[in-house]
Amino acid sequence: MNTKQSLLVLVLPEHRVPRDAQKRLQDHARGRLVMIITDKNQLEPLLDRIEIAGGEVPPPFISRMPQLKWYQSWYAGADWLQKFPEAKSNPFVLTNSSGIHGVQMSEHLFGMLIAWYRKFPAAFAAQGRHEWLTFSYPDMDVLADKTMLIVGYGTIGQRVARVANAFDMNVIGVKRTPPTEPDPYGVTLDVFENLYPRLGEADIVVNILPLTPQTKGLYNKNVFHAMKRSSLFVNIGRGGSVNEDDLVEALQTGLIKGALLDVTAEEPLPAGSPLWDLPNLMLTSHFSGFHPQYDELAFQVFLENLDRYNRGEVLKNVINKDLGY
Image (cartoon, rainbow, N blue to C red):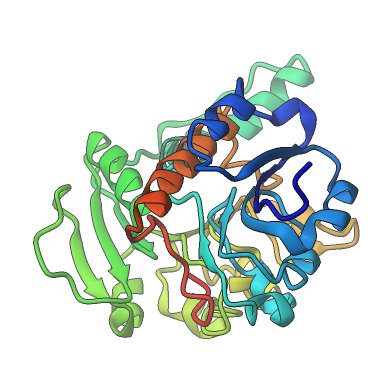
């Protein structure tokens, strides 16, 4: 092995390495030595030679890579930067895999919504008891004509809006920057500063915000007070964006109708958390982003960015490490 040759590494568990990854990376390596790392302990002797890394690099290692120019994270979130400021200070370009989550996360979201409005959990529980459960018409509800407020209207939010259109819903999207052109899905766009008045218009409030110092604990009692008492709060973004004590109180007192969560502030959720036992809360264990081809999709983003890197072009999905998105 040439001990001076710079390295291009992909760090993933062996069973998740995409097909022919070594060859496909080598075709884009431009003289760099390609290594597939399936045991993170193998990184230790290589840290001072890594120029490009992709996959799941442990954050403590990143601060110890003096030659690192670019890290392609396998995921969308960059909140790990808040926990490892020494990695954040390393002057590398950070990109994420944004753009590959919309399909599965929107389907997961609407699966939860349909289950809620059509009383699937009660029906499934009755099936387990061999009980033919009867409902009246008013027990059921539909998505059509409801207003959904998407907080954090980016690529995932656009996919959610596209699906919402098929259900004849009205959609409002809140984002950080003012819109410069009409939304392709007919969404009413607004800026984050107008969140509070928009909350009162929504039947369903969906959080897709990243976790940053500005969004930590954003959903507190003030937000829940601003929502309709008949509304649902849905979180497929980050659990740390929610003040869970305030959410529990809002659900217990009827301040809002219910909550659908795929994420929590602490994961796994502690056994003693009151969230487990709230009758008006549905919980899934942070798998809305899972897709059977996830690693291949992320690998394709890596390869596309590798081509851009080799040509000296701006990379896709660059993260501002100070802002966290």
